[in-house]
Image 1 (cartoon, one colour):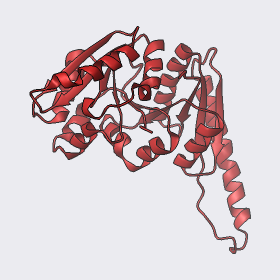
Image 2 (cartoon, helix red, strand yellow; image 1 turned 90 degrees about the vertical axis):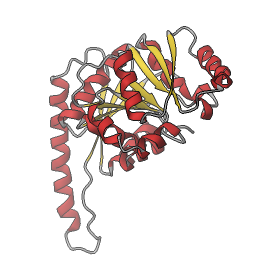
Image 3 (cartoon, one colour; image 1 turned 120 degrees about the horizontal axis):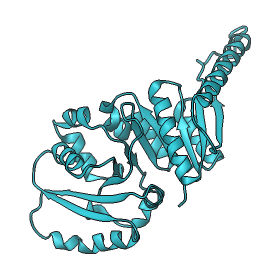
Length: 278
């Protein structure tokens, strides 16, 4: 899978603009286009209300003009060089707009900002972004606002070997790592201290699938809270991004269930990529 079009949800907040800058960097590397999506979701007024159209249409037109102006300011302040950037406006809820734009423009990756580094777990499992992942069926890259010019040279890939089936689900990650010249650190967390060899065939299939990319495999066999283990791995291995499969993933279940989750998300400060398992 090649990344040809990157979708960036845009409300022109600092975190959205920061995500756009990251999307520009990726687009230049991948020789991809960028599709900016903004929404103007007006409140519903019953058709029987006298003058409903005369109320809504001027407001909508004015807001669209504001969005156009903000888009022009965004482009003029960014170094877009050879990247083609298109702006599309929808009068719809954000998740509907993203779904429509993804289908209409055949987008391959969503790059979205988050207002705080504390929000990345919410972005992964929260209702709005999880709904986006479910609907879009394409990878989502979440960029914390505090992360400027992120490095993707070393990517941590959280893998549950016991629940892993087809490496093809990781095709977008392979392409992403290829044009970023990334090395991949596969992280497996288990409380079982024995029979780890039964997953050697899984690691072999993964290794073959990512042939040509530098790889390393790290297994953590202890019962510490998962947030502590992953934070330790991020720091010790110098990871610039974390990748996780959100659906049917025991790692996510452990994250949600641990009382240390808030501590983890407070201190994590790297981008997160998710791919919906079909």
